[in-house]
Length: 137
Image (tube, rainbow, N blue to C red; front, side):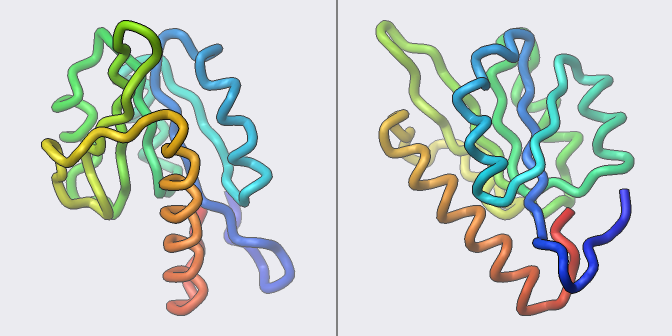
């Protein structure tokens, strides 16, 4: 994957992790916000993707994968990660990492608020990349 030129928009790498990837269809709008979405269904796929892709955000619904295993793969990376916790009627998004810092235990986010949180994170990543002259993806 080549770095963007000055004329190309910078994109934020987003990894969607889970066995039921159809649940992520509602996140296709992320591409309109300047994201490049990647999908992984297993620990091995996540590891392989990380070897050649720079990520800014990880969203996980992989119920069989322990969050700690994915966190171990992301150690040392400046990435924000959220885990979807299914509840009786819907879900909550649990912050796991924020800019590479552990934040498990932070308040959960309702789905209706989650899009706004993602937009703010995406804007922050793009602003940081633009001010430092670095490639996002």
